[in-house]
Image (cartoon, rainbow, N blue to C red):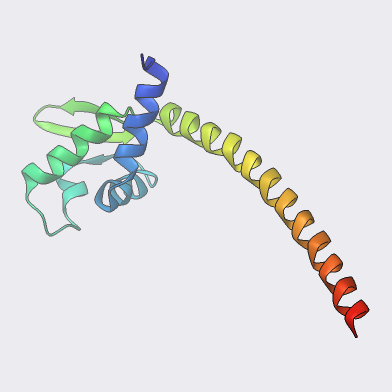
Length: 120
């Protein structure tokens, strides 16, 4: 069974997989914006932007508040922080693996040089 933390992480990476949603997050990094303001740079329909915003909300990457009829959005950092922590854990793992591979390749390269020198 998948736990809530794992499901949330899946939602974050799904949300980040789309370039339009990443662009929306980049815009919100500058400050709060209305749905209309967020839609302006894109050549897609307002309903399509609304769907993107919904995906970002479901991933808890943004927060919506209503001002009369205007919906305003801002970044929510907790989910992004959790995703960054997950990535950092695996970055450290892979760096260790790559360091081990580099050491192995250097050792085998030196062994091959020694073998080549003995043949001449």
